[in-house]
Image (cartoon, rainbow, N blue to C red; front, side, top):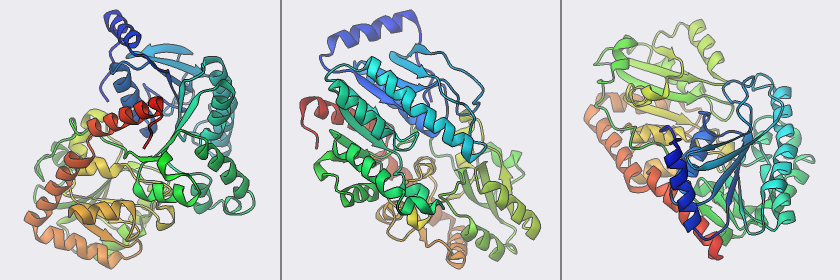
Length: 432
């Protein structure tokens, strides 16, 4: 993420731009914003800074807590690159346990609702993200009271996600009223932005009108993340990976929505191929258990590295020859792993361990930029890896097609302009 401008002259320039724009204010609501580096914060910061540069009057309601350090406290209000940031007090237990996380969620709803009642004017546009879950319900109520319009930016769909990840009650009686409230807030919105076609299909199945659904995919920094020839990332040498080794990589969070059994089975099957390495860069809910199992089974072909600094992201994404991305089939249409776009921007082919008709599987097949493997089919994953390792030219060609897919469909500039176009449509009552 590029640092936002902050000089007095820049502030004056943004104020002049806003004065020239006739229209409502944009009020984004999400727990995290710059300087946080969480995924939702990065996307939100990119979009808000872009819209402010385009002359929109942009505001953000966020928490004073930090994603990375819950004990830290950000200022209650400030201007970041022409964006007015209003931060509210919440609990700050962090992500260490479920009860603390739930308290952080619950405290944000009334605080954000109260802030909206103070900030909103008739005709403004509230853009609600999904951190915390079901935030659209509180935002819809505030928008209705103040005569504002609502746009929902759906990064995931709750309570369905929680139900599929083990909270069985949310698939039954407890989930039904929550879904009804969520669906009412979606149907009341001027527009609902889904981050994938499968998610859009889910929304329509819930009764949301098709003409109130727009698909705008998440993005990566395709200008900073550029292809590096295989084997030439300096991190490979630092991590004692030989230039001739074939590296299967995973970058980012390995959370509850993902699975590693397929990868683990492939690593077992290929343990006699010392030139094939499995590299895990990141962390997440399943990462600790995966590391323990690798150690217990003596799998010396699986390597672990921590999250890398953002300035090293291009090199860390270039360290593998191929990336694998996973999503549990039950979560198709509820979540889209955004790490897919970074790996593709780096010019690496993707092994999509997902449902055969999943969001990423459709993209991989349509663009010929990787291989689709059904979750649990370790033999198929091992075969895919040995096939790519045995034909480095074909592997590189798939990586080139992955980068071409990003440039043709998923650049950051395309996504930001799609957002600007959508919001202009909301202002003019012409949402498509």
